[in-house]
Image (cartoon, rainbow, N blue to C red; front, side):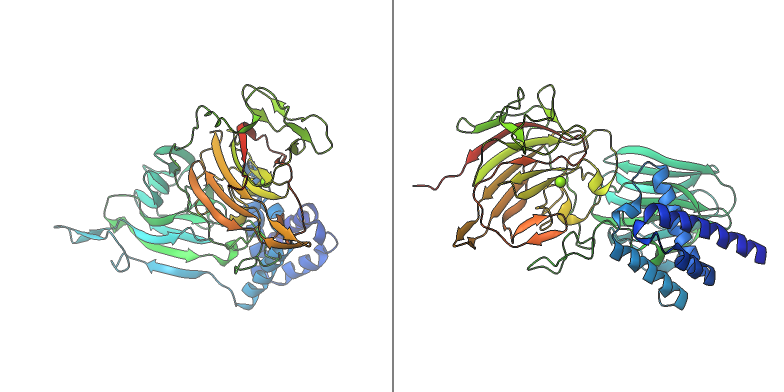
Amino acid sequence: MILNRLATDLRVLIDLGFFCIECCPFLEKRPQILALALLLHKPFSELFYLLWLECLRLSDYGEPFIFFNMNKITFFAVVALSFGLVTGQAADRVIFEDSNFSKEGWSGFAEVPGTGGWEIRSRDLGDLAQAVVQEVTIEGSGGIFLSAGSGSYVSVFRSEGVVYAVRSRDGERAPIGQADADGTISLRLGFDGAFLIYEYRASGEWNHLGKSDIIGVVSYTGGISTPDRASDMSGYRIIELESLKGVRFGYTNTHKITGTQWVVHDPFRPQPRQINPGTTTPRDNPGTPPSDAIVLFDGTNLDAWEDGKGNASKWTLRDGFFECGKKSGTIQTKQKFGSVQLHIEWASPSVVKGSSQGRGNSGVFLAGLYEVQVQDNYDNLTYPDGQASALYGFRPPRVNASRPPGVWQAYDIIFEMPEFEEGEVVKKAKFTVFHNGVLTQHAVEIPGVLGHKKNIPYKEHGPGSIQLQDHGNPVRYRNIWIRELKPIQ
Ligand code: MG
């Protein structure tokens, strides 16, 4: 026993050592202190080991290391939480429990005539909630699901001795993982703040079947994924796992945004609901600009654009579009603009790489200062004020009208310049944005100059270039035109 314990602690210690050195440069000089804490108390070490495993899983799947997306405050919150576990202040919380299907608290729960049994269908789980996990124990076939409606669901279930993890989005079904497992097993389906996690337990430890992106930010329904009676299932629980908290993308040590209860890039700000934008704007073929528009890109040349130093754009011109390459640099229009109507079409890479802010990120800057975020947020969570068609660092879109990766999307942006008198702002900048024809920002006043982790007061400025951001992802643009908004006589 003691040897086992020592071996476990040693393994955790080694893992944590690597973790501290490789992943948290700011802790580089202090692994010994944390290592000592590890040896002192097992719950602390278990939590770190759990988080470390999660990190390994993420890197296995080619996702960027999740801790890169955590700031120091979040990290120390996790550490504080660990001490909470040690002192018994923080613990997993059972939100709903029905050990042998007593019928209470379920919707779609119906008695099966002539059998004396019940059929259980669903239970509302509300909006996607971080660290919430569904669990069930089964003896035969069946399992659990989370549904976002209309052919979008995730499920972990057993059929003929094989446990399957499945994800379906708009009717398109994709296998996530599978494993052989006989006898009584438990199944678990949860959300860690960024990804859906699929697990099963035959005996002892939980086994990881896989993880996947979300299937839409909407209210979720959970339940039993078999039409059979629940007679060979038991121990259904919905649990909030304290140990999974703190992995959500975002920042908590930034300034408060004026007029809101949120800080810049707040990870806990409500996520805009993901909708299907339909096809009110072209997606397969570009449209044509109005006759009085200034055409900034018609598919043939980048003559209207330059880098920040007056050199030619280094973005790659392809067949009817141009694309950000390696170290292309941010580009801008040669002409400066004030208040405008801007139409711009973009597409994120069809091969999904990365997550959160690392996935299909670019941006459209108006007057060279205010960013309308360009990003692949189709089933990709990030902090709400940093997602596609957000006014970056300030205002999330009203809805998430993203199209899938690789599909052309459109922004129609109406930007009104701020006005100044003697250096003071007397009229703030204003944005209205349509994303794929869907209104996402309506006459929103900008409180100041926005940016990554900043939200600073206005400084007097005049018209500026339209800029397209190089954020290291091969995002494409096409069909760009602009109309200057002059005062009506
Ligand atoms: Mg950006």
